[in-house]
Length: 227
Length: 132
Image (cartoon, rainbow over all chains, first blue to last red; front, side, top):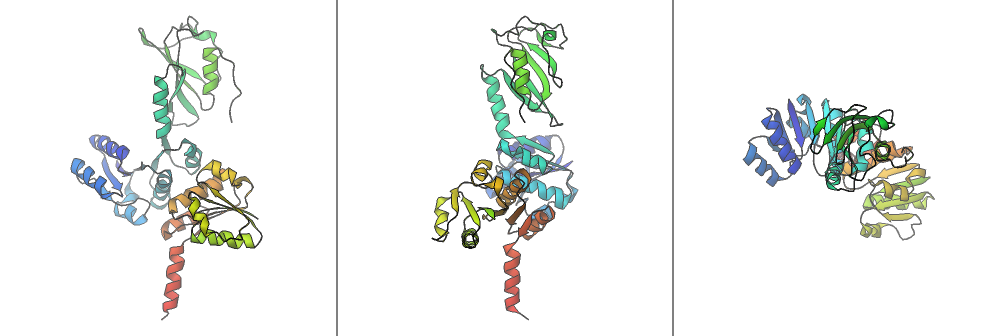
């Protein structure tokens, strides 16, 4: 695949390395001359100094034959415009944008950006995972953006300990996919699976109902669904 | 008319003054309070420190009741993003966006924003003055 990466910062740099190692044809477009030098020293002729918002640059890099454009600069507004230029002026079939501000997601979705990756949300999720007080961690938004994969931890003093999965009245669009025990390792859950302290429950749920799922599993009062 | 504007540079401040003196209800946003020095002294509208790409600042500026949103900061991409927030998140009936780059300007025009490119207008005006 021919993939254009807009932005040669840390994300763009490591992304380029991964994609190159997978055998893709890639080009990094970066405004800063020093970053360009660094990338070309490490990876060769895979970088062009320029700005993907400029149609001239996009023509120069052959954007109309690109299979994918990934916008990973540190500016949400630049990433949005780059994806829109790629989509509407050069018919790039697949656009991926990084966003820093999670509140930008609805706009990017409405503007038809194919995939949106919120770096802030990802970092938060990883930090939350390390916090013992936080029983529910969002892991992944599935490509059908309606659904999300989450992890619920069974605290040692939780009411879940010793209960069967079948004892919980689950939400209509939620599914427990995997239970990972500290010692037992991963097991495919059935209605008869008994939960143990420190089990990790991996579930798919509808975006927006994560809290309710957590409340069902931890025995807390249900909140009214958001939105 | 209720007008929310973003960017209090020379153009923004001048336009805000014009609309205000015509009796419109104007709120202008800029991330730098120092920019507000450009606003004419008899301006009766509101000047708020905040970014037009920040939904909270937009709500404070009254975007939900606005008839028109105008984006006139120095940054084409900022203007484009703020305008699309105004149009697609807040459903402002008219959204006007300044974009220097003529190619991006045409693209956003096609995507449904009302856009203006000072680059094109300036070059055209100069060309006319040269004559011949």
